[in-house]
Length: 226
Image 1 (cartoon, rainbow, N blue to C red):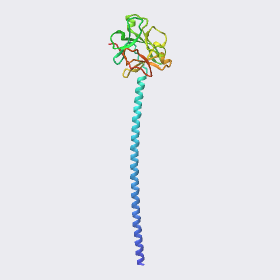
Image 2 (image 1 turned 120 degrees about the vertical axis):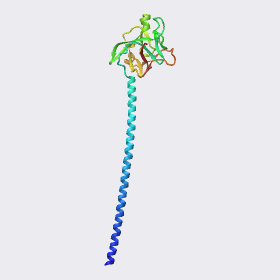
Image 3 (image 1 turned 30 degrees about the vertical axis):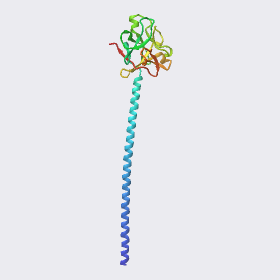
Image 4 (image 1 turned 180 degrees about the vertical axis):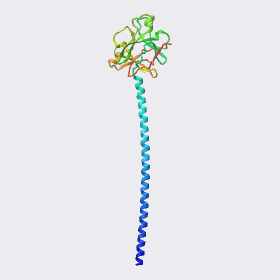
């Protein structure tokens, strides 16, 4: 009986030790799984946060670019009427010739009143000021009838100085701002949805006539005479 009891006690002790070892191993496995789960969560959270930050930065950059673009293409609501120099870089727009019959418009370094233009607000289009652009020289020095900047039909030819018209070929809208610069858009071509609407200075040859461009034109500084 004593032998049997000893044997049983030995078996019971062995099984108890085995159970303890199994519980310990199971606890270690659970702990490892818990640590791995926490690590995976932290890594995933960091990656998600990084992706969110990168997306937010990209969205902010796109919004800033769109805002800048919108600002550059927005019609100017302030009244710019008055005597102005229309300058692109170091060159200003002028009317050539001393006679009333010469209505050629070009760009060169500003020197005299042939470079001076008067912007006259004559109406509004969708709440935006519409101007005529009148040559000071043709008005005061020669008293010419042909003194208003005029776009050819469909803006297919160079602008010129012509006699007063009732239609929109002599009407102009200014877009942009004083920071990014202004662009000058012909109202007749805008209303008729012609592709070419914006006044462009010919940068390749300073003696070449200006022309009309699609989408955008030259960036003008519209400044008062000093």
